[in-house]
Image (cartoon, rainbow, N blue to C red; front, side, top):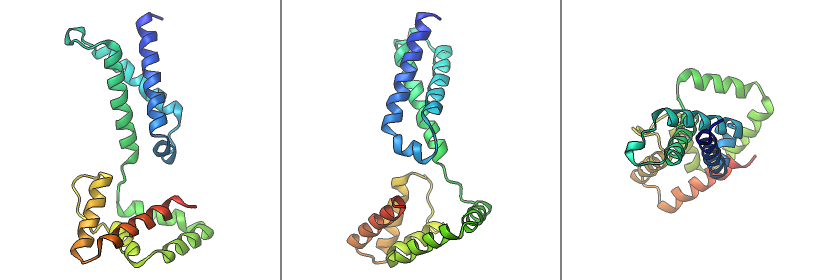
Length: 171
C-alpha cells in the first residue's frame, strides 16, 4: 500500500468518524451504522483519487476530505427523503394495523394532542401544504405561515410544535 493511499484512507476514516459523531441521532434513526458511513467515505476517497488535479492548488487530503464529507451529506439526505404516495401510506397503515398494541398506543398519543397539533398532523398527512423544497425549516415555516393566516396565535403554534416534537421522541 502506498503512503498516499494510507494517508487518504486515514483522512476518509477521520471524516467518517467526525460525521458519525455529529449526526449520530439522525443516522441511528435511519438505521445507518458506522460501517456504512466509513464505506461511503472510502468510496468518496476512491473518487477523490481518480479526480484529483494537483494543478488546482488543493492538497489530496483536502480534496479527499471535501468529497467524503459531501458524499456523506448526500447519503444522509438520500436516506432522509420521504416519498408520499398513496401506496406507501396504505402500506404503512397496513404494517401499523398488523400490531393492535402499537395502533392503540398511537391512537392514545394522537388523542392526547391539542387541537392545533392534531390540525398540523392532518395538514401533513393530507399534504395540504405546497412546498417546493423539502427542507425541515421550509416545511415548518410553511405550516407556521398557514396557521398564522388562519388566526392562530404565535405562542399556540410554538407550543404545538413542542408538543409534536415531544410526542414523536417519547416512546
